[in-house]
Image 1 (cartoon, rainbow, N blue to C red):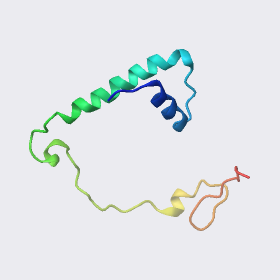
Image 2 (image 1 turned 90 degrees about the horizontal axis):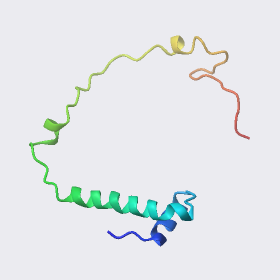
Image 3 (image 1 turned 180 degrees about the vertical axis):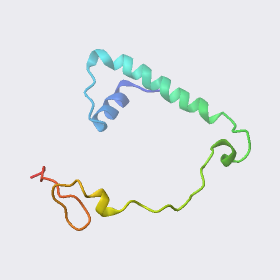
Image 4 (image 1 turned 60 degrees about the horizontal axis):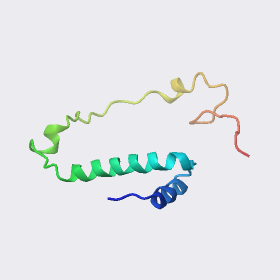
Length: 90
């Protein structure tokens, strides 16, 4: 995929990034390299069997949770089930 300066400008506005004019060539080059790498990954054929053999998953075991009164014991102020914190947003 070819990346031009207009594409980088558009993406920088979407991501709310401030890319300076002197950085534009470098960012364009880096983005082309990243997208080129992604294209090369499409050509790789996965081998080795099922996904579970590649990724070791632990068994899902049900365990008792902590006691809520014990968890809230150090709170200065609390409701029935949660700590009360100061309001930070108006």
